[in-house]
Image 1 (tube, rainbow, N blue to C red):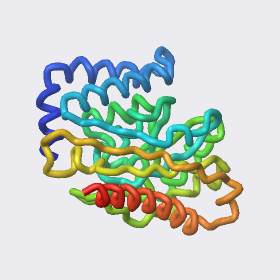
Image 2: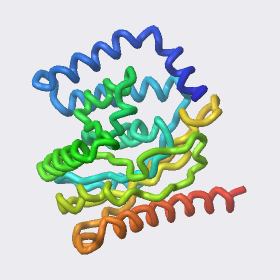
Image 3: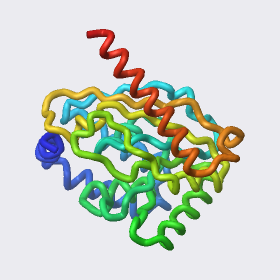
Length: 244
Protein backbone atom coordinates (compact mmCIF):
# COMPACT_ATOMS: atom_id res chain seq x y z
CA UNK A 1 0.00 0.00 0.00
CA UNK A 2 2.90 2.36 0.78
CA UNK A 3 4.38 1.77 -2.65
CA UNK A 4 1.02 2.35 -4.33
CA UNK A 5 0.73 5.77 -2.68
CA UNK A 6 4.34 6.51 -3.68
CA UNK A 7 3.76 5.51 -7.33
CA UNK A 8 0.60 7.63 -7.52
CA UNK A 9 2.38 10.65 -6.00
CA UNK A 10 5.39 10.32 -8.34
CA UNK A 11 3.11 10.18 -11.39
CA UNK A 12 0.79 13.04 -10.50
CA UNK A 13 2.39 15.28 -13.11
CA UNK A 14 1.56 12.87 -15.95
CA UNK A 15 -1.72 11.50 -14.54
CA UNK A 16 -4.12 13.96 -16.27
CA UNK A 17 -2.70 13.26 -19.71
CA UNK A 18 -2.44 9.48 -19.20
CA UNK A 19 -5.93 9.09 -17.75
CA UNK A 20 -7.52 11.28 -20.41
CA UNK A 21 -5.78 9.31 -23.15
CA UNK A 22 -6.87 5.99 -21.64
CA UNK A 23 -10.42 7.30 -21.29
CA UNK A 24 -10.50 8.53 -24.90
CA UNK A 25 -9.28 5.23 -26.35
CA UNK A 26 -11.55 3.20 -24.07
CA UNK A 27 -14.60 5.22 -25.10
CA UNK A 28 -13.85 4.95 -28.83
CA UNK A 29 -12.85 1.35 -29.61
CA UNK A 30 -14.01 1.91 -33.18
CA UNK A 31 -11.10 4.35 -33.63
CA UNK A 32 -8.43 2.42 -31.73
CA UNK A 33 -7.65 -1.22 -32.40
CA UNK A 34 -7.49 -3.83 -29.66
CA UNK A 35 -3.73 -4.00 -30.17
CA UNK A 36 -3.33 -0.21 -29.82
CA UNK A 37 -5.41 -0.10 -26.64
CA UNK A 38 -3.50 -3.04 -25.18
CA UNK A 39 -0.15 -1.38 -25.90
CA UNK A 40 -1.35 1.78 -24.16
CA UNK A 41 -2.24 -0.28 -21.09
CA UNK A 42 1.20 -1.90 -21.15
CA UNK A 43 2.85 1.51 -21.55
CA UNK A 44 1.10 2.78 -18.41
CA UNK A 45 2.17 -0.36 -16.55
CA UNK A 46 5.78 0.22 -17.62
CA UNK A 47 5.62 3.77 -16.21
CA UNK A 48 4.28 2.44 -12.91
CA UNK A 49 6.96 -0.25 -12.76
CA UNK A 50 9.73 2.22 -13.48
CA UNK A 51 8.51 4.63 -10.81
CA UNK A 52 7.98 1.90 -8.23
CA UNK A 53 11.22 0.01 -8.80
CA UNK A 54 9.31 -3.11 -9.86
CA UNK A 55 10.84 -5.86 -11.97
CA UNK A 56 8.71 -8.73 -13.26
CA UNK A 57 10.22 -11.94 -14.60
CA UNK A 58 8.18 -14.36 -16.71
CA UNK A 59 8.62 -18.00 -17.60
CA UNK A 60 6.56 -20.42 -19.66
CA UNK A 61 5.42 -17.97 -22.31
CA UNK A 62 6.02 -20.79 -24.79
CA UNK A 63 3.07 -22.57 -23.13
CA UNK A 64 0.64 -19.90 -24.37
CA UNK A 65 -1.30 -21.13 -27.42
CA UNK A 66 -0.43 -19.29 -30.62
CA UNK A 67 -4.00 -19.40 -31.93
CA UNK A 68 -7.48 -19.27 -30.44
CA UNK A 69 -8.89 -18.11 -27.16
CA UNK A 70 -8.02 -19.40 -23.72
CA UNK A 71 -8.62 -18.77 -20.03
CA UNK A 72 -5.81 -17.82 -17.67
CA UNK A 73 -6.46 -18.73 -14.03
CA UNK A 74 -3.85 -17.21 -11.65
CA UNK A 75 -3.55 -17.23 -7.90
CA UNK A 76 -4.49 -13.84 -6.44
CA UNK A 77 -2.13 -11.78 -4.27
CA UNK A 78 -2.95 -8.11 -4.73
CA UNK A 79 -3.49 -5.09 -6.93
CA UNK A 80 -0.45 -5.76 -9.10
CA UNK A 81 -1.46 -9.28 -10.20
CA UNK A 82 -3.28 -8.44 -13.43
CA UNK A 83 -0.71 -5.75 -14.27
CA UNK A 84 2.13 -8.27 -14.00
CA UNK A 85 0.35 -10.67 -16.33
CA UNK A 86 -0.52 -7.99 -18.88
CA UNK A 87 3.08 -6.72 -18.80
CA UNK A 88 4.43 -10.20 -19.66
CA UNK A 89 1.61 -11.35 -21.97
CA UNK A 90 2.52 -10.13 -25.45
CA UNK A 91 -0.82 -10.62 -27.19
CA UNK A 92 -3.93 -8.65 -26.14
CA UNK A 93 -5.92 -10.16 -23.31
CA UNK A 94 -8.70 -8.96 -21.04
CA UNK A 95 -9.93 -9.69 -17.53
CA UNK A 96 -12.96 -10.44 -15.41
CA UNK A 97 -13.02 -8.26 -12.30
CA UNK A 98 -15.14 -7.80 -9.20
CA UNK A 99 -17.54 -4.97 -10.04
CA UNK A 100 -17.21 -3.50 -6.54
CA UNK A 101 -13.47 -2.95 -7.02
CA UNK A 102 -13.50 -1.85 -10.65
CA UNK A 103 -14.70 1.73 -10.51
CA UNK A 104 -11.87 3.59 -8.81
CA UNK A 105 -9.80 6.00 -10.88
CA UNK A 106 -7.23 4.32 -13.15
CA UNK A 107 -8.65 0.85 -12.38
CA UNK A 108 -11.79 1.92 -14.24
CA UNK A 109 -9.69 3.10 -17.17
CA UNK A 110 -7.72 -0.16 -17.32
CA UNK A 111 -10.87 -2.30 -17.29
CA UNK A 112 -12.56 -0.20 -19.97
CA UNK A 113 -9.44 0.06 -22.12
CA UNK A 114 -9.19 -3.74 -22.24
CA UNK A 115 -12.98 -4.11 -22.57
CA UNK A 116 -12.95 -6.19 -19.40
CA UNK A 117 -16.00 -7.58 -17.66
CA UNK A 118 -17.33 -6.44 -14.29
CA UNK A 119 -18.85 -9.29 -12.31
CA UNK A 120 -21.30 -8.53 -9.51
CA UNK A 121 -20.79 -11.27 -6.91
CA UNK A 122 -24.10 -10.38 -5.25
CA UNK A 123 -26.18 -10.73 -8.43
CA UNK A 124 -26.42 -14.32 -9.66
CA UNK A 125 -28.27 -13.38 -12.84
CA UNK A 126 -25.69 -10.72 -13.76
CA UNK A 127 -22.84 -13.14 -13.03
CA UNK A 128 -24.42 -15.71 -15.36
CA UNK A 129 -24.70 -13.08 -18.08
CA UNK A 130 -21.00 -12.24 -17.71
CA UNK A 131 -20.06 -15.93 -17.87
CA UNK A 132 -22.03 -16.29 -21.10
CA UNK A 133 -20.53 -13.13 -22.62
CA UNK A 134 -16.97 -14.16 -21.79
CA UNK A 135 -17.62 -17.68 -23.10
CA UNK A 136 -18.79 -16.35 -26.45
CA UNK A 137 -15.76 -14.06 -26.75
CA UNK A 138 -13.32 -16.86 -25.85
CA UNK A 139 -14.91 -19.05 -28.53
CA UNK A 140 -14.12 -16.24 -30.98
CA UNK A 141 -10.46 -16.17 -29.95
CA UNK A 142 -10.26 -13.72 -27.04
CA UNK A 143 -8.01 -14.39 -24.03
CA UNK A 144 -9.16 -13.68 -20.48
CA UNK A 145 -7.69 -13.49 -16.98
CA UNK A 146 -9.97 -14.66 -14.17
CA UNK A 147 -8.88 -14.97 -10.53
CA UNK A 148 -10.63 -18.06 -9.13
CA UNK A 149 -9.80 -17.23 -5.50
CA UNK A 150 -12.11 -14.24 -5.81
CA UNK A 151 -10.02 -12.07 -3.45
CA UNK A 152 -6.74 -11.82 -1.59
CA UNK A 153 -5.27 -11.19 1.85
CA UNK A 154 -3.07 -8.19 2.59
CA UNK A 155 0.59 -9.21 2.82
CA UNK A 156 -0.33 -12.52 1.18
CA UNK A 157 3.16 -14.07 1.47
CA UNK A 158 2.48 -16.35 -1.52
CA UNK A 159 -0.34 -18.22 0.21
CA UNK A 160 -2.82 -19.87 -2.18
CA UNK A 161 -6.44 -20.06 -1.03
CA UNK A 162 -9.12 -22.42 -2.35
CA UNK A 163 -10.38 -21.79 -5.88
CA UNK A 164 -14.08 -21.19 -6.48
CA UNK A 165 -15.53 -23.91 -8.71
CA UNK A 166 -17.89 -21.54 -10.53
CA UNK A 167 -14.91 -19.77 -12.09
CA UNK A 168 -14.36 -22.76 -14.34
CA UNK A 169 -17.80 -22.83 -15.93
CA UNK A 170 -16.40 -20.66 -18.73
CA UNK A 171 -13.76 -23.24 -19.61
CA UNK A 172 -16.36 -26.03 -19.74
CA UNK A 173 -18.67 -23.94 -21.92
CA UNK A 174 -15.93 -23.03 -24.39
CA UNK A 175 -13.73 -26.18 -24.37
CA UNK A 176 -10.83 -23.69 -24.39
CA UNK A 177 -7.38 -24.39 -22.96
CA UNK A 178 -6.92 -23.55 -19.30
CA UNK A 179 -3.62 -21.81 -18.52
CA UNK A 180 -2.72 -21.99 -14.82
CA UNK A 181 -0.64 -18.94 -13.91
CA UNK A 182 1.54 -18.99 -10.81
CA UNK A 183 2.23 -15.54 -9.37
CA UNK A 184 5.06 -15.18 -6.88
CA UNK A 185 5.86 -12.15 -4.70
CA UNK A 186 3.24 -10.13 -6.57
CA UNK A 187 1.74 -9.07 -3.23
CA UNK A 188 4.95 -7.22 -2.35
CA UNK A 189 4.29 -4.48 -4.94
CA UNK A 190 1.10 -2.82 -3.70
CA UNK A 191 -0.18 -5.08 -0.91
CA UNK A 192 2.60 -5.15 1.66
CA UNK A 193 4.66 -2.69 3.66
CA UNK A 194 7.55 -2.85 1.16
CA UNK A 195 8.86 0.38 -0.35
CA UNK A 196 12.17 -0.76 -1.85
CA UNK A 197 12.81 -2.51 -5.19
CA UNK A 198 10.66 -5.58 -5.80
CA UNK A 199 11.02 -8.50 -8.21
CA UNK A 200 7.86 -10.47 -8.98
CA UNK A 201 7.43 -13.65 -10.99
CA UNK A 202 4.79 -14.75 -13.50
CA UNK A 203 4.88 -18.41 -14.51
CA UNK A 204 2.63 -19.61 -17.33
CA UNK A 205 2.20 -23.34 -16.72
CA UNK A 206 1.40 -26.00 -19.31
CA UNK A 207 -2.13 -25.74 -20.70
CA UNK A 208 -4.80 -28.08 -19.42
CA UNK A 209 -6.70 -29.09 -22.53
CA UNK A 210 -10.39 -30.01 -22.76
CA UNK A 211 -9.40 -33.63 -23.38
CA UNK A 212 -8.02 -33.66 -19.83
CA UNK A 213 -10.66 -31.66 -17.94
CA UNK A 214 -13.78 -32.12 -20.06
CA UNK A 215 -15.23 -34.96 -18.01
CA UNK A 216 -14.40 -33.35 -14.66
CA UNK A 217 -16.78 -31.43 -12.41
CA UNK A 218 -15.94 -27.78 -11.80
CA UNK A 219 -14.84 -28.61 -8.25
CA UNK A 220 -12.33 -31.11 -9.63
CA UNK A 221 -11.01 -28.64 -12.21
CA UNK A 222 -10.59 -26.00 -9.50
CA UNK A 223 -8.62 -28.44 -7.34
CA UNK A 224 -6.43 -29.47 -10.28
CA UNK A 225 -5.53 -25.90 -11.28
CA UNK A 226 -4.83 -24.92 -7.67
CA UNK A 227 -2.62 -28.03 -7.25
CA UNK A 228 -0.48 -27.14 -10.28
CA UNK A 229 -0.04 -23.55 -9.14
CA UNK A 230 0.77 -24.62 -5.58
CA UNK A 231 3.36 -27.10 -6.86
CA UNK A 232 5.08 -24.34 -8.84
CA UNK A 233 5.14 -21.99 -5.86
CA UNK A 234 6.51 -24.78 -3.65
CA UNK A 235 9.21 -25.40 -6.25
CA UNK A 236 10.24 -21.72 -6.19
CA UNK A 237 10.28 -21.64 -2.39
CA UNK A 238 12.35 -24.83 -2.31
CA UNK A 239 14.86 -23.40 -4.78
CA UNK A 240 15.18 -20.20 -2.75
CA UNK A 241 15.68 -22.12 0.48
CA UNK A 242 18.33 -24.38 -1.03
CA UNK A 243 20.20 -21.31 -2.26
CA UNK A 244 20.42 -19.77 1.21
